[in-house]
Image (cartoon, rainbow, N blue to C red; front, side, top):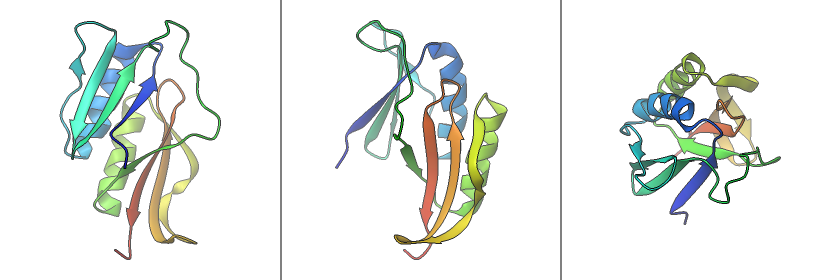
Length: 128
């Protein structure tokens, strides 16, 4: 359904270190610098994540209620994703990473904020 997500950053170089680390855990490569703008592209599994300064030239701010979800293959991969994020400027938020029973099914969930405060989630549907 989605083709890409753009995450605003006031310090794209700092964000690149964070996203390079968490994307590597998911099997993605390093961000590729846009030669025209201060942003980086991450392509993986047919989708694109863009991290950089807002195109309108304004300050990047966090959207209240927005979460960007990343699919993980196992709880172990999710835990490694969290570790890579925290070691590269992210902040662990919400409940501790783990498996929970929710309306959508049994899920592994882990939540981080990136260095600019954007809310990210690692998710694995355990019953699929």
